[in-house]
Each structure stands twice: as C-alpha cells, then as structure tokens.
Length: 420
Image: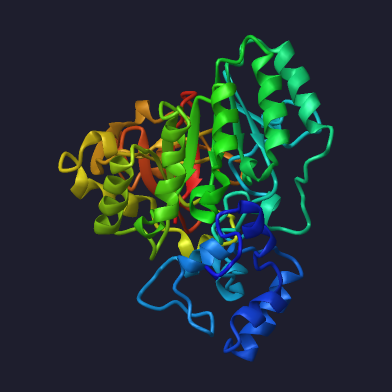
C-alpha cells in the first residue's frame, strides 16, 4: 500500500480507500468464500471504509486475518458476526441513549446538540475510516441514515447561536468534521468567529488514527487564523502512534500553532486496550508528544460493536487503578460513562456501604423511561438500613436481569446506565 503515488496526500488516501466487498476481495485474495458472503450481506445495510494508511497499521495477511497479535484489525475490519448481534446492548439507532429529543435545540436539525447549557455541538456524518464500535453508527455506518444532515443545517445553527449569547463554546464532532474540505471548514470557522459570544472552538477528530495526512500546513494555518482552541485526538492503542501520527502533530509546531491544546479521547475496548500495560504505554506516549489524555470513555450500549467491545464499567477501574500515583497526573484521563443526561465520572472506589432508608427516597430514571425508588437497588435490607455496592452517588446494581449503574448525574438527578 505504501507504493501509493501520493502517500502523503490525504485526498489520495481517501480515493484509494476500500469501501466495497469487491475491493476487499481484491485486496485480500485468500479470504474464505463464506467470509466474503457475510461481508456482502453486511454491506447492504452498513458502510465500512479503510484508508491505505490505516491498513498498514493492522498487520493483515492475504486472507484479511491479523498477524503478530495485532488487536487493531478487530476494530476496523468489518466482521458481521460480531457487529450484527442481539441482546440487551445490541445495535439500536432508536435507543442510542446519549441523544434525547430535547437535546436538538435547532428544530428539525439533528446535527446540533445542546447537552450542557454553555456549549453547542455540531455532528458531521461522514468519516475517513469506520470504527466497528462507532458511537455514532446511526449517522456514520447505517445506510438508512436516520439522522442524515441537511444542506441548510449550518445556517440554521448559526441563527440559533446569534440568538443565544449564553453559549460560549462550539464543538465540531462526528463522524469526522475534518472530512470537510479546507474551504468549507474555513468558512464555518469564519462564521463562528463573527459571533461575539463564541469564546472557544473545539474540533474532535479521528484522523490521527485513520489518515494523519489530513493535518496539512494549510489546515494548520486555518486553525491558527481562526484560533481553534482545542483539538480532540481520537485514539485507542499505542500502535497507532506511528511516524505519520507524530509528523502530523509536529506540523502544528512548524506552523507556529504548537500552543493548540491537544486532548486525547480514548474508548475503552475489550481485547484492545482493557489492559493496564497497554493503557500505560498509550498514556505515556501521548504525554511524550504533548497530547493530554482527556477522557477514557466506557463503551456505549446499543452500538454496532457493543457485544464485541464493551467491558463492564468496573473493568476500566481495574485497568486504571494500578496506575494511580505511579503515572504522572498529567497523563491521567478522566474515566467516564456517557448516559442520556451527559457524561458522569466513574469513581475509583467501590465499597459495600449502608444508608438509612430516609436517604433513599430519590427516584431513578431507568433505561426504559420508568422512575423507580433508589431503595429498590439495594442489595440487602436490615430494618431501616439499606446496603449498596459502589459509592453513595455511583451504585453498581441490576435491573430486570441486566447489570446497571445507578448514579447521581451532573444535574443532581438520579439516572440509570446499562453496564457491560
């Protein structure tokens, strides 16, 4: 693949990407017939895409199987039998629980999401490659496009911002906003900087693992000109910190914008990075290259790869806890779950404790939209005392035979999250 004439040109990377079963079959001639058939069936309803650069990080043989113990192939190479699964957390575009109808404040425009009062998030729908665990499968992977953006979305969003001066931060997210051409991105940044109330602009992107060549000198100049405040770097494994990854970061220094904050967002994935040694290597390498580990994200339910990649919530604690105070706090991420009401921090502590029944009268917003008394999630009762597992504001329990987390969210309300 590195014989590609314009290896460093991201447009060539996109043009030479594998997007169809026929292209996969040609690239991997020894792939078994039954696997090709499964891929054909999968491609009728769902997208996949692999850039030439990404393929070089997977260590695949001619049958499309990973070699040398590389766990990355399971993330990017489509495997229908593990993606199209059934069960409590299986793919459901209607239940992707971190998006509520009330979040979409620009009427009829699912591209704009307001979860927190002072920031508006814009979600692009395309991506340079596709991750099997994608948290935005209903926008990026699903060909039914239940939340497909409209051409007029952008101006509608700008009108909303001009009318709501309380919003001080704008976040580009995905899909991948850097899939847009430079001219489109520059025009959007210009629009945002014309609104006095917008103080900070963040761009979240996965190009550092899909196609780091997208970070060009021109793009750096655009980000500097419009004072993009933060760049979210999506990454999952230390193998992804390649020469190309480092070169992309270096362009910000060379372009005079090394002061741009780079914040890593790291999904916790079973069999990929749910290991203390792997995670430590990733965090320290990021620190070495001046990328702050920002979030360690527990895998969301109801995504395509939920069955394959979700761990239990507590597994993340088990992985992180040995690094506490042995790893520089600069390299330490905040471990979070992402429920309907917004992100919630996962405490490192977990104990069995007792509460008086009078302290358990709160109602919990369950995953089926019912509201239940907090007391119903106790593991034991002795008179007026109730026993729980976790911390007083973050409780490990079960609901209708499924493991769940019951917690107090940032609004002070009690909410439920489907555990892995």
